[in-house]
Length: 83
Image 1: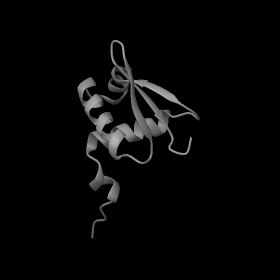
Image 2: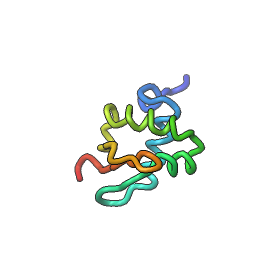
Image 3: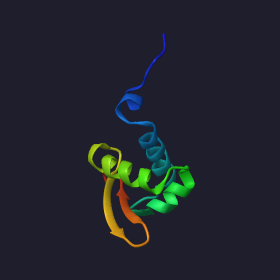
Image 4: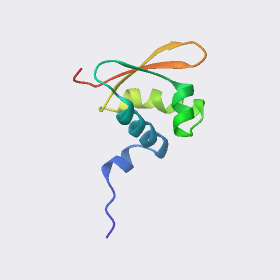
């Protein structure tokens, strides 16, 4: 019998990719990420990053994600919820 994790049923493949990326890149405190650099590092398009980061900002308890600014690419402010 195959075990299917709740993680896989809650998030789509792109969202899982972004969560893994953020977990690996996060440092203590506030972190700023540009969509175009996330896209370059993950192989997703900037549009996919923006769409999924916006969704994650509403549904992902692992991080507090806020659209911070736009200058050549959307900048996201990401913090741990306990920070």
